[in-house]
Length: 108
Image (tube, rainbow, N blue to C red):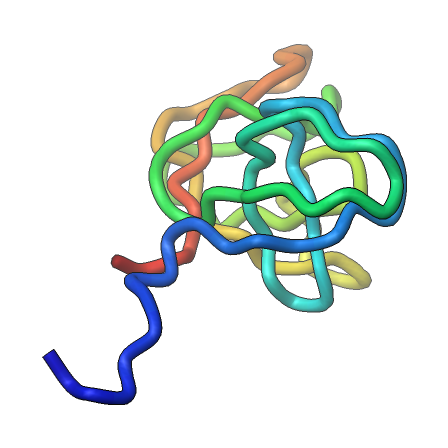
């Protein structure tokens, strides 16, 4: 291993800017991940930047398997404009579905 490598980068420690619930999607700058624990404002917590997670989605969106998906700040959407790319849908989630399974863009 290179002498300057710090970590794998899957779990990243960040500071909560608001109340965080375990399993919640969290965007810090351009770095998206899923909270591994609850945290109060100002507390450090870890988020996972890799893997497949079931996340809330924009109910009206019809998301196909493999489609790029974006974070709106509170839900997954197929709309790129004004949102942050977080990965792709690992399964389809049609109009009316409240959640979608997302393969996050982070790498291991």
